[in-house]
Image (cartoon, rainbow, N blue to C red):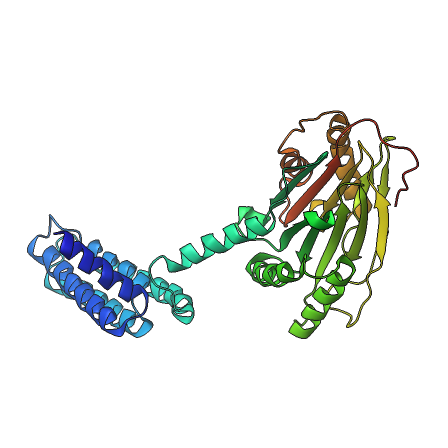
Length: 375
């Protein structure tokens, strides 16, 4: 028995890898099963459901090539029609045949996309799960660094695992440099998420490997070369020196980050250059500043503050009003409350049908040095 199980596993592995012979064997097995499931309801009209013919169709949709799947669906429908002609004790077999035909058409439609990608079995699900985990790894912020606390929340539209927003982080301790990039790809839904996935990998190769001032120009050149018609991306890039609190912000058409000053007020940074992918050779000037103890910096995507028919400043004001108690409380706490960013996203834009991202950068303590410049 163990030897047989091992052989079946090897055969199934070859089937998922696209082996032609293994595919033919699978088709033969499924056709045999279809024949048996067609005959059993005739022999046992009250003991075997004719709807069981849907099982080989669904199974074939996962592992068979498109041409083989057409043969299997045809055989299943023919078997159901045969049963309806030979014996129909309840007068429902024609309905079962119609349901089976619709199921076969649905499986064929789904199989068309899987066939184009060469996916069989649960390979597609595994690939998507690995890709989602990879994106989360790229966005992972340090939990605690010196006297700093970083918190982020990304809420994709509709609760999906992929988003048109993405976050990247790169830490170079030898240079006392931490870089964060928040990117928002234009559009919504699966197409925006696909472009976002592509760009996250490309931008991750740049971040930390080029000087901070060269990152957005290189990212813009990449999008320009891609030639995506009517598509672009906005981005904000933070280059922070944790030891001193000094930072530079580079903005590409993104909502300007907002700083909470130790005196209790909010200050918005200046706008930078155009969105990525629109203007070849665009320049992205830096906005420099320094975060003292008790100061915070908020980076966010427009999905968090946009309200249809209302000014963007209204949404920003609503976000800052909700965030102020959080950043005030963390001025003196040495063990910041985790999950504050997630709660803020749900409080400010919990029901918004758009991707929403928030990043909180906080320097802990209540004894800031004097003479620190703002934006």
